[in-house]
Structures are given as structure tokens and as C-alpha cells.
Image 1 (cartoon, helix red, strand yellow):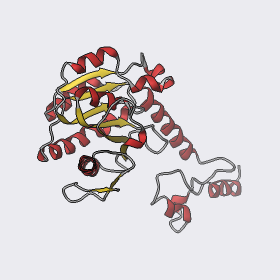
Image 2: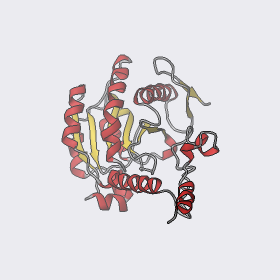
Image 3: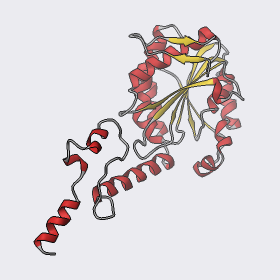
Image 4: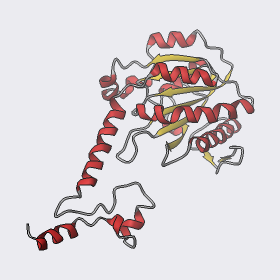
Length: 271
């Protein structure tokens, strides 16, 4: 390759980050999506290709790896609540991914264990589930709990023993809440990882939980992670939904969140 060919090759490697006035550069300030990657000949630049491969590997790891449940339990106990370890009806991770229905129900032995602590007099039941991202629990769950538990205590809510469930789907929280006799169940669960974030946590609230509730009967706060909704903000939004659901007597499509107030309270009730 002579010098002229080398200079031409270098020119093709110019990436948008080096062009501060370009549209691609401006877009990168507003989205973590892969925009304006540039090209080298007919292919994307090597760095962009390697970053894509890394993101894909992290997403796969988030789905398949098992959380360190013992370490998570110890950390939660230090925050105050009693913790129960349960599992769904899925026999293993592969079956969990292939049979979503099995992840929506408690294993019979886990249900029996839960029935032993049932009081029928809790305001809130909290469920932590790995869902489709162990990384979300590892990165976000303790921060959300650390913000949420004091808010619940200050408002005088009685909280059931906190439940950790392996290989669980969102709807499993309805069975947990029903067995415990809780007025409201809140599920913190790892969301399906994408190529921009593998550790996003979802928060789901259902009023008067029972087996058979539909997605239309619950509310969701999604994208709790470093580039999305921060844990304290998520906890305040969640408290606003909780108080709105209690006032309305139900959750879901009829309950619309407001912007969280200073104390994190607010909920709009649709007629």
C-alpha cells in the first residue's frame, strides 16, 4: 500500500465522534442506540463491531447466569426485612425459557413454605425475581430496596417477608401476594436484556393480587438502570402508584402515574 492509498484508507475510517457538527454526533447525545457508526469500506468500523459483540455476550450472560442468591439474601437482611427463598415450577433455566407458564406459578413445595408465614394482614408484599436478567438484580435491586423500604415505613405500610424467587415471571407475584394475603404486591424483576443495556430492572405493582390477574391489571415502571430511571426516582414513582392504587381500589390501566412529588407521592385516578 503506497502513501496515497494509506491516506485514502484513513479517510474512510473517520468516525462520527470526530465530527462534532454532524447529525450523527448530535444524535448520540440523545440515545444509547447504535447510530452513526461510520464505515470502513463496506463494513462497520472494528471498534463498533467489537462493542456490538461484547453487548451481545453480556445480554446472553444476563439471561443464562444464576444470581448469587445467598449473597443477595444476606445483603437484603442487612436492610431489615425477613427473607424467604422460593422457586417457580420451572425445573431449570432452559425449561424456564421454553415454558413461560411454569415461571408464573410457585413450585408446590415453595407454596407450602409461603403458606406457613401467611397472615392475611400485610399491606405490601415484595418479590424479587431474576426474570430474564440476573445482572439487573445484581446492579439495581439493593439500591431500589434501600430507597423503597424507608418510604414504606414512613407511610406506615406493613410489609410481608420479602420473597426471592428463582426462574420467575411477573405473574408469579400474584400468587405470592394472594397466599400472603397482601393488599398489594410489588415485583422487582430483571427485564429482557437488549444491546444497549443488560441490567435493566422492571417494577410491577398489582392491587389485590390473585392468580389469573392480567397485565392490564398491573402497572409497570421500566428501565431502572444507570442510563434510565434511577433507583430513588423509581422508588418514589412506585410509592405514588401504591397510594393511587389503594385510593382507587385497583391497579392497571385505570391508574395513571403523575410526576413524583418531592416525597414521591402522586397518582391520577381515572373515572
